[in-house]
Image (cartoon, rainbow, N blue to C red; front, side, top):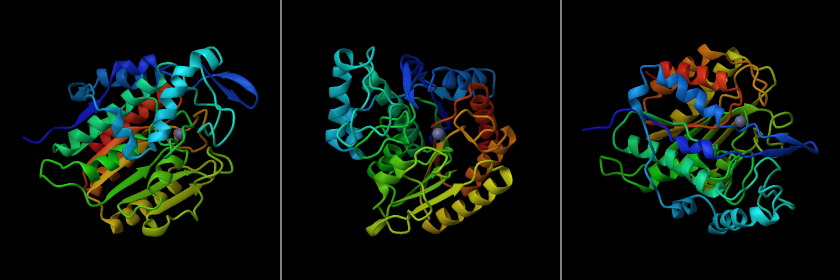
Length: 335
Ligand SMILES: [Zn+2]
């Protein structure tokens, strides 16, 4: 019997508590907090979606090397071990790029970071399994997020790239029909460009990456997400960035969505992976767009009418009440 829809959640995310980031020369309380996901979980508890919530399965961490360099995974383990002795109150920060494989001072590594980041990846991989087993869609609400983690570097609060792991799992593992996917599309709807996801599949003709995000001159990361980045070698034309100005509201955003869906339809993927950030919500501390709760239902409808099995993965969004409101609205649109 085909699986039904599932929302994948594990309370272990609460143990991932990065303490500070170094921002413009100051120690700042880290904004990627457990409250982000707990607000969603609480909203789901009182809703018709409660019965769809389930925990993740275990996956061996060697799967991380399907999209990351083995040396990067080894680096994360080594620095988790070093954090207590070399870190700042137990948190290790990069010193030099590229040796230290870190894009910024916002993504500390502490003793349990690798275990907990992999547990978030397990939530996403479980969501992928649910869809391979026949569910029309699934939603992973793990944290930390993943789309800034590249082939060989962490950054932007991300350590393992969940969207990439899920897309790669569709290419590698057969679904209930016994077939693997030929082509997968990733739609990145976080306000920040998914530089890691783009990096991982930049030369691939099997994964189409489409992103709608803030222009790199004002939205993180500053080095990636330009419209001229369209893929390379076999992947030429399979990367589609739409950087948008600060203040973008639903009208402009919906046109960008139309263009992204047109391009993805031309690519004709069998599966869709969505990196969903709620930092596009009006008033987000790291935002700049002007989307509101009902707009996420419209996004959910667009995802549903695309007609492919979908795995949605939580990325950013830093105002817990808005993340919860956006999620519930998105679920309404998917239903
Ligand atoms: Zn973001």
